[in-house]
Image 1: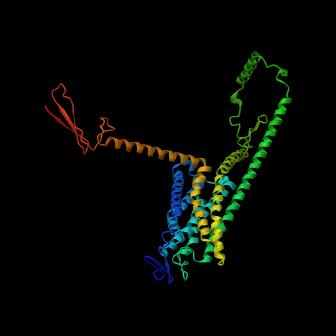
Image 2: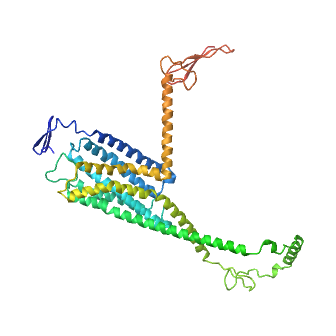
Image 3: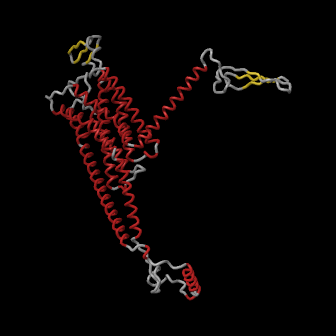
Length: 469
């Protein structure tokens, strides 16, 4: 850079070409980009911090899917802190890069890594959702297991691997323009676009298609079972309607006859001699649970009852899980759709520029697609707020608590300003007593003949008592 760029009051020397910038530098500043960029950074930081805080503080939101969403929010936060300030600085200077080229390499590394981490997080979410829908009984929703730790770790490790060539000198090309910060190697642009976007996105879409097909089959099976239950109820009603009416049935026995029958049964039970019975009737050669008497009914242990009970409980649990998954998946396709809408133009335009050296792409188009990609980091918290009830409730509660604290602080500050203003009569209540002012007072002399004077010190607010005896 020292041999290529020389800045003076009126000229810039770039590769031996002297350019006069004294007349155009003041008018080339892009103030709308600066204002929009600052607002974008504030929205990204506030929204994604709320997502992280909501998962950290709310027990209902501590699910494995939300841990992946937190990972996505962390990537967006890092993008807002590490990448967007320098990008806005370049946009404010109308695309002119005036900093060190090592800073440019760091910017490109973080840009590629964080954008790749965002899409890899979405891909990991789709894999996690597919497993939750396909094998819900073996899916752990409360705690992160080894499979989910592997997905989270692989997301960031692969993102760093895709961006690592920028750190290892791939940007050091001959005749590099020091006034422009971009990816210099066209082959690397194609490689990073394929690894970051064109491979994960089809995988993500295929997984979501498989999930929706599975949920649709489950919904059709549930409706078929419901229809069969309705038909069974109708047949039962028809059978009940064909029975004779209650008026045609014989009248019940009178209470006296019932009482006589009960007395006879009690008398027969008393006549049984318990000593004549076998003391161990269950220990027969046929087995410990079979009676040797042929008149006694056998009740063998049926081992199939427990699996049937477990199967019924598994079916109920699976139905409950699938219902929960259907509710949770309402927000995730929207996140993926918005991501594709925001980042597809960026990767398509950059890949076209790398593959077609003779194609002219206007700088305004490059700026628009780049801005559109960064706006995606601000849209994810808004999507969670609109489509997820638990996130929305926490956001409302957090904003309400912050507003209450702000209102209380404003009232307290206004009250103190009025109380300490010149000419204002200080009230004698404890709430309005300024602690920094000495306020002496004398207690009336009691009948005992002594007077006590208490003075409050301005330093420690402890009373000093003087007594006269």
